[in-house]
Length: 141
Image 1 (cartoon, rainbow, N blue to C red):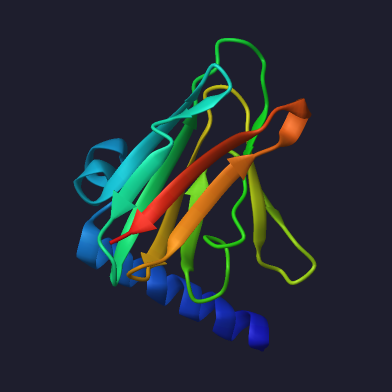
Image 2: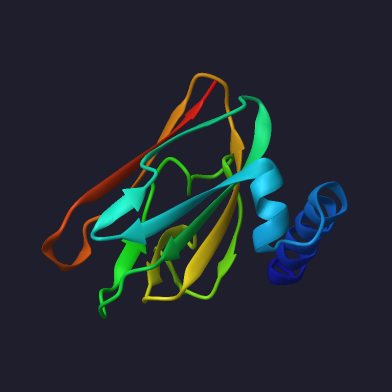
C-alpha cells in the first residue's frame, strides 16, 4: 500500500511540474533551467546561478567523442526536500535509502534533474568515475 501511495504522490508531482513548466524537452528546459555539457573531461559551464526559492532544472549531457562514462552525483541536489525528479537516458542508481545516489551517462546520454533551490544555498555536482575529477556548482541567489 505504501508503494501505491508513493507512486501517486510521484505522479502528482510530475503532473504539477508538467502543468507549470510544460513537457520536458531541450527547448522548454532552457526557459527555466540550465544546460551543462560534458566535453573533454569537464562540465561546461561549471558554475551556474538560479533564482532562490524557486524550482530549477539542470540538464547534463555527455558529449564526449570517445567512449568515456561519466556520472552526475550530488548529495545536496539528491537530498530529500531538494530533489523533485530525475529522468533521462542515463542509468539512475539508488542508494540503500532508496534515494538517487548518482546517474551514469554514456556518450550521447543525458539526465534532467528537477530540484527546488533554496536561496543562499550552493549545490555542487561532480563526477569522480574512471580516475578523473570534475566539479560543477549551482548557486541559488
